[in-house]
Image 1: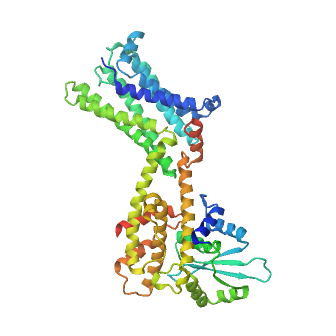
Image 2 (image 1 turned 180 degrees about the horizontal axis):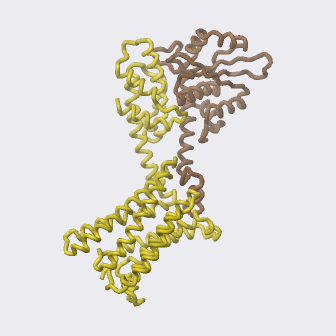
Image 3 (image 1 turned 30 degrees about the vertical axis):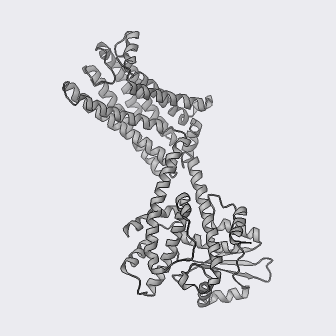
Length: 346
Length: 181
């Protein structure tokens, strides 16, 4: 039987991440801080869990130990512990504790995994990357999917509160990646739970392979996203800078159009304009120049409106009113989204 | 000294590549560098006017005082820019209205005269409305200096953001201690 390369790659990804995080800071004192050791534990436990799910190595391990489907117990126990470590990491960052009900549910989960294992071990060996054949493993899977779905939903709720408070684009990108990962995780667990039941009761269904492929894609997104959330800042800088540049260019285009709408009435200001090189390679400078000129023109336009200048049309009056409603901030960067909204209306 | 050299001289000495550059920090630098006192005077001016600078010397003062008059009816971002622009004129040692403290008192008691003077000495009028075109190169120089200062400040802010993992200090510190840096 061929190695399940996708599972092997995902497991290797997390072993690499584990080595990276442990190597970066071997100081043992760090282990007393839950905010630091819980995420590391999450990564390590996930690496172990994913390793126990690589076909056919998992089956060979079970054969070596002489216990059918032992890799399932080890994989699921580590996955559950990893999920708990993830929630522990999140609540620790917020300087809170894990709710009692979550601790109770986790304890029950481990008890259930242990109590159900004898029936799992009594079933024929099954491959991890296949939908279920035996009833005991079906129940085992459904239990895991239910628990991990619940943990992922709790994680999403905690994480969304953070994301709302995050001001830096680096933090927002990292947070967005983690949110995508958690959401894909919920979709994967829910999808697998439903498709496992469906396939179990319809073993000859033609949907078997498409369902398996689709759920594997969701799993890959979830796991890769989780790894991406731990990426060092240097790695995320390039996509951030590219995204910022594109956004700035689109904003500049909109604001230049807005400025020319107003200046058709107010006239040309005597300021030197950013060169073409500056527009392409120093976009923040070109943006600032355009923002200030729009505000200059707005003030001059208001004077023309008050003096009943015949060149002022209804459109100019609406533009001036919209510009009066801009946020009252001293930070020009905070004005950009609102200015862009005004520009898009005209 | 050509305009661009004057601008470069100011940029060389004023720490403009800081995240929190503001009219107050620029004014403090000018006060120290040019031995001058600066006062900000927000004034509700009519639409179409922006700001101006008047310099006077009181008999008891060792240094002249510059009154940075700016239109308080402008939006906050615009007020900040206008203040910086007026300060840029001072930093570049451009000539402006000067008088004694008595002249200043009379001026501020006569709003019509004040508005007329602001109109005469103000920048930010369109090319058609320019009363005196001789000040245009100075206005352009001051405007360019102001824009360059804000551009440096925004670049510094962006670079600071890119170096940090999170704006939330606890989270940033925890992730760094975890080894993500």
